[in-house]
Amino acid sequence: MAIITIKQLQQDISTRFKSENSYTYFGIDTINYEFKFNSLLITVGHFTNNNLYYRFTFKDVIAYTVIEEFFLKFNEKEEFETFAFFGISKNSNFKNNIAPDGLFEPYLDGKLEIKTYRIFAQNNFIDIITKIEPLIEV
Image 1 (tube, rainbow, N blue to C red):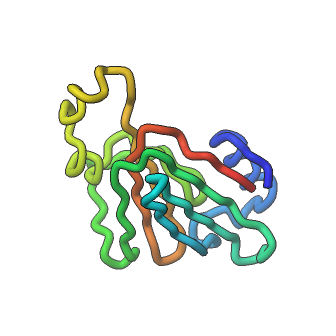
Image 2 (cartoon, rainbow, N blue to C red; image 1 turned 135 degrees about the vertical axis):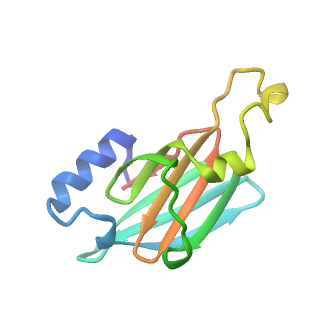
């Protein structure tokens, strides 16, 4: 598997799947949290290409949640920069509930920025709060 950036992920999905790049064409195959390493592994596949998977490894996970699509309540104040099945939060209810602004300031000393990512595919939404950009493999 090759390691790619978030920008390369967007380019790969657009090139490879063209008009079939909506989140509805993707499914979450694996979700695995490793307590020993405080990391979350998620694999996502496309319904028409069973041999290709995108694997995301989130390290230093502060919190994550998996919500079935039917039960997710969208909020107008939430803002995500999204493409296909991947999103980066500009304003997330999940982050605001888990890590309100200023909560971690004494520990972070202003050096680290907490980010919220969302992986969403048919039937499930996963929100992840972490200090580190995910490792993406294809």
